Length: 381
Image (cartoon, rainbow, N blue to C red):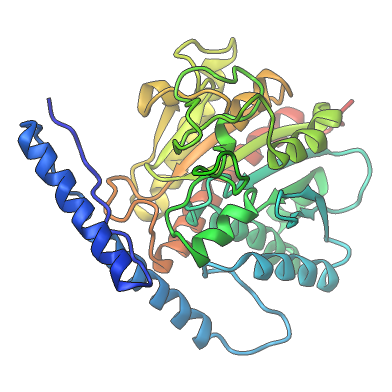
């Protein structure tokens, strides 16, 4: 049986920490050899990959011309830069944009939403979230890119974008796990969970295993030290509750729930927790296939459409399953962005930001056009 081992030698500030991790990696290889397990090393030095991506990101930021408006598109921004960008956008385009917090994390950071839309009134809403898993930096940058496409379409009076903004309100939670996201910058680039202390030795809950719909099932761990720890009980985490308490009271107004993750280039229909499918599976899968066709045409990537159990593995307690199973949102999707083979995995270089954003904007327009075709002229209850 062939096992693919993603062997990570983490970048550490102190040489002693680096040496300890290198020794640990050697021990893992020795144990695999001793057990006669066939393996391959996919990334032999994640630390070097992290360092190069950080250097490139800093260089891109430094080369930007100074201006009053600090665009973060095309960079991996710190969380305070994301919030500042949302604030500046709402100030610069008050007829288009507004920003607000849906609540605070355990460490006191606001979970900031950028809302984009025109004309007000009773409109269908689109929800987009990214960065539920802290280390998946290409997810927030893709949500930010899509937001920027809506902004630029408004500025340039693009008729297609103006139609989207007139019919729909977009609520974009670019970083759904601010504490974990910041921890990636300051301490551990490959951190996944939030930052709530659980035990003396273990911190954090996997937020995409903590939603109440089918909580505690397949693909979720009860061990607080595991990366997929589901939490002590369903919806135990502030970040999850903030999303639920914002969306659920008016869930009938939300037409599309889009969750951005990395990596794998996979576009998931429902369900994540089981190979069973909902009654409208054929219709939703057809739209997902048309979406990935549009994505793949932009840069020649090969995204696949289907369910998580079919294309990757089953997992329970996800936000996307909750969006359909509990909130009953009609268009519930989750995408695993670049890359496809794990050449860089979670440590995407910043050069991937714009191509990834562009292809997923093309995909988003397929879904938006389908919503308008089926719901145009209607208003939510």
